[in-house]
Length: 318
Ligand code: GDP
Image (cartoon, rainbow, N blue to C red; front, side, top):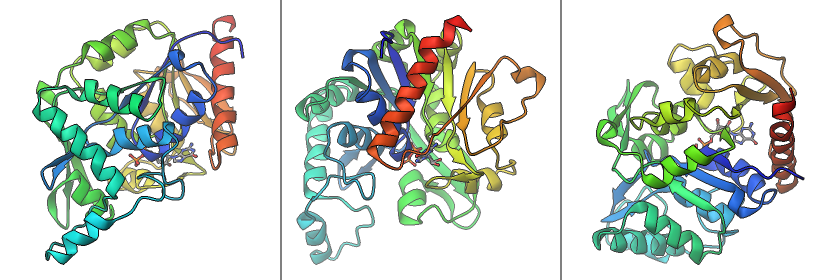
């Protein structure tokens, strides 16, 4: 692979982590910066938990529980079970090793470190050589407005209620005051290509794109800006993407996803099992590429990463 460019990848958690992992093992580490959603972050038992950042970190660090795609492999649950002994009913499953991540992060936040600094140090501790950046250091909280249960903090919607309540809408508390960090700004400004991973466009990518100024920063770059489909055969590979599209009254199709990103991207990778989406005239500038986007094992992740990089390497010749 002769591609020498620097790629900025935007992701949420489990779906995005698969492509992050593929790219990490295909590029040199200094060629990759990963910008991660923090709208899912929350306080729990006094600890700051950053589910998406940790999923990316555990995946790239080779620690992840592969069967579930998040958490640490072979973790023990002594602390979690002890909470039960104390009469608690914990609904967010926390392993002991995972708990140590949150304890370290929380202690450092209380000492005044930023989430960006802490993420850099935790990542380095688990041997990660590329840069992982939270979308912002400002606190942002995704709220799910549901029909059955009213307003739910994101993890209550996603984990406690297993994303079953129908969503009316989402809001991102704190987003108006969120600041782009110098690290995110610098990474986007020097990117040779920008990729939006196959993460949930509404739950995972939307909060990132709502950080004031970020859309303009991305859209202002005259480089390949491609998104990878989160839908294959009209369905999400995992999670509620298709379900919430239907709940929002949207057509559950790749075309809807392309249109959602159309003012930001100039390339879209749809899955080769699907027909090419028919684009409206205002999206005619978007180059389409049919790729095998199903990342069901490590080989498949690297194959997709390789195909995307080959596309980027050819980009300027078209
Ligand atoms: P979450 O925050 O843990 O829900 O994870 P993300 O938002 O990063 O990813 C969820 C999305 O990833 C869902 O829409 C899935 O359909 C998509 N996804 C998961 N695995 C794959 C895959 O192998 N290929 C593709 N194309 N999409 C995937």
